[in-house]
Every structure is written in structure tokens, then in C-alpha cells.
Amino acid sequence: MKPLFTSTLFLFQLFSLSGVSLAYDLPPPPAKGSAAEIQDFRILHQYQNERTSEQCKAADLQSRPSLEGMFGPSTGILTAAEIRLVANQGDQIIHHVFDIVEPFKNQYHRMRPYNEDLTLHPCVSLPGGSKAYPSGHTAAGIVLANFLAQKFPAKKTAILAQGIQVGINRLIGGVHHPSDVTAGQNLAKQILNEEFK
Image 1: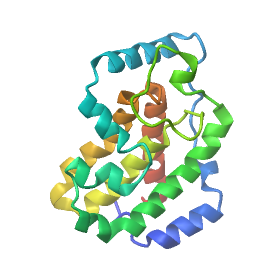
Image 2: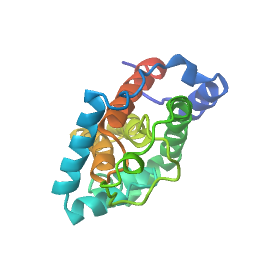
Image 3: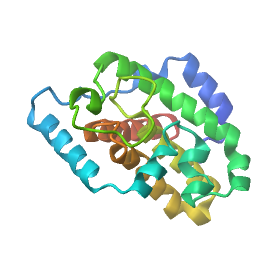
């Protein structure tokens, strides 16, 4: 596998101009009333019943997608100095991933779980939009983690684990369905495979 993001700015400009989201595919979210949707809500209620205030606080720090919130000093992964070294590339990656995610959100129009089940109470800041599928935070966390793992190989294991945790935190916070997170993971793998082979 070639090093990721060797010419990050050029790659992101190129793919942004070429309508890269057309290269990706996601199945629709679970149908209303389906067994898969029922399971989504069951899992969310379990997270809600078991989460701690510390977990909610950590998840809330990532409510706004940012390199520092996802991997910075508050997470114990990267130092402030390390964040500064990759800040511009990290911001480019986040914006690019969300540009890919947005057409899917518009296509599927899946509501946030707390909009459909009023017994779910998010413990993080509510997202600006109401469209849930797929989870952009999840996709960005995984793509960022792969980039950061190459930049800081001594921390690779912790970085990759944190990339997954970003998506889990959206479940802890109660702002995404589990299948939104799975779709975000799927999309992240496609982005890595398609653009950074």
C-alpha cells in the first residue's frame, strides 16, 4: 500500500472537483419497523442505560468534528505539538470526508434516533442537521486514524483504536443509530481503498 496522503492538498482538490462521492456506494438504512431497525433502538437504549457521565463528557468533546477533538490531548492520543504538525492536513481530510458523506445523507434522509424515539435522550450537543445516515464522524475518524497512524507510527495501535472509538462515541451520545456507524465504517474503507491505494 502506498503511503497515504503523500500529496494531500492536491488529492483533495482533485477529488473534490471530480464529484468523488459518485464513486461510492452504500445500501439504504434499515427499513422502518424492520428487525434491523428494532435492534438499532435496542442497542441505543442499552448505551443510554449503561453510559457514564465521563463517557458522555468525552463523547461531547467530539460533537464538532475536529482533529483535536477526535485525537488531541483530551483523548490522551496526540499532544498539542503533534496536532499542530498535522492540523492543516487533518482539516482537509475531515472536510473531504464530509463532502462525500453529505450526498448520502441527502439521499436517504434518515432521522436522528432521538427524533424518532422520544425516550432516547442524547448526552452530547445535538448535531446541526437532522440527517443521520451514514455517520460522518465515524467515517472521518477512521480515515484520519489511518493518516495519523502513518505520521506517528509509535502510536499506531492507540490511534487506530481511537478512530473506531469516534463512532462508538456517537452511540454513547445517542445521536446516531448503530447502522449509521456501520455505514460510516463501510464508507471509510471505500475512501481508503479508492483514493489512497
